[in-house]
Image (cartoon, rainbow, N blue to C red; front, side, top):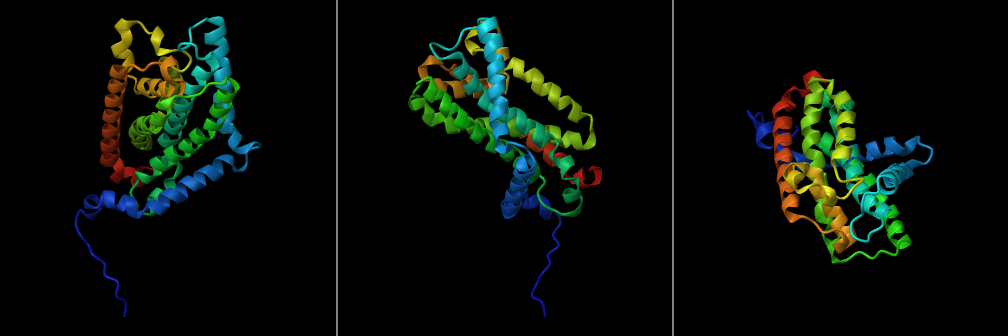
Length: 275
């Protein structure tokens, strides 16, 4: 006779939700590994796409902003290095936001048939973008060798800003993917938001050129603190960081993350019916 005991407890899913996230951690790994495999399995040059995209963007920005517009670099840092130091977190954010916002719709069959904390799906999509992010560091290392640029002690704080970039990507991603399940129009909005955000963020230019009267509004962009933090970690004193602006970006990131989780959890019960 079987010893299996089935316990029916009202509200059990809500009560043990965060514990279930840990219980289903292997599913998180499987989804992330599957998405990485699908992304590069049938491509001609595989994971090199994670390198080519930021490099080509860096070249274009260097020509347009550095050579034609004559915008200044940070200190004596080479302009291409300054741009690429910003491209790393921005490319991660853009890829993570695009992938996570469509993750629930892309996994409709799984969501409609099996119970698990749905938060796993968009989070695994962000992790796939994080793999691309790590691959791009190879090019950054090569550029620093080429320019004979040695980072300072600030490099030790790079993991903190990497976590901040992860949070800045996950918060809006959770909010948008939950809305995308109900309103499919959002999938057309995401590319526009990413393209628009690229020119509002200090990717092709230094934050030092932003007029003081616009600093407060400018710093409400959560990617400002992330990008400036990356530049400071990689370029050191050549790219001083505005801690006030960074703190404001951190606050906005935390608010977006909390709002994103709340919105996601609020709509989670309807996902199986809507996808």
